Length: 367
Image 1 (cartoon, rainbow, N blue to C red):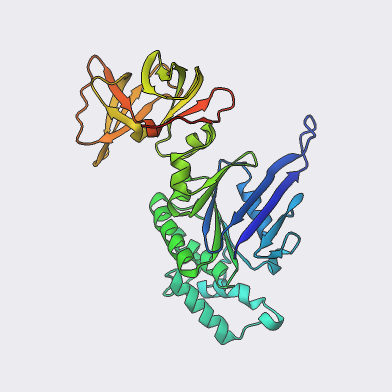
Image 2: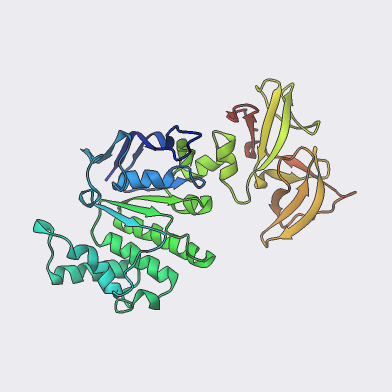
């Protein structure tokens, strides 16, 4: 089931008497979510991603714009008639019901032609419980289960209705790091097996990039960039997207272009053909540094963090806008700071320039 969002806007009345203008949570959002894909809505708190999910589900009505499921407009259709499955971060399980009872509950409210027999409901419960690997836990109460198991129950309850669309609102936020990793892999597996069009809301960029077919990066209700995770990471359209994606985050410097060369702290560190002379923001991905005793970028050595396969060199620079520069290099390198300095050359395809005023990307021919 493809989902089409057409000029979707949601405004909320301001509660600030000094600023009576409406708060725009989602601003003119237009996007087509392909059938059977998992889309990650990504952005910081307050960017409008959860509001977008609520508009798709029908829990909130848009101020303007339209929503289509396939060819059917559902803009003003109530949630129960949209065929959506919802999973929230707090699970929202009924504590007095068993796992079986929690999963079966949505089907017990079906009426008319959709009403199911007890045998049909039990068959569905067994099917989805097996899918999320909790078929051995059906007689337990939620209090007798771990957080990861409870989250699987919530997913099973959403899937048992056989929804046209599955909506996940930060479903992993309450899990510890190991469980988050395991559960996100299971969500991806479930989505592929069912083929249900899925929208996954998160502020965790690593989470979104690891399981999404496409990501939508949002800021202040406005879509910044849409694309495949690796493409957005490699080719950010502006400084916000570049900063938001990546662990460790991108290293940022104040720079200047003169005569086709990029200068950081007065040193020419890279050829940037075709870029006019101007002041720029410079972003270098952690993997974009090459340890080089004769490299043009001289940084103040801080420490070496051994990661096993790689090592991270922590350093500083007067032109850096971050407290620490983190450079990921192969563990085969031996860091020998001379006079407290470590020198690097830069990979052009991992170095991005941004307009000083607009922060939009300035492109150049990477070599």
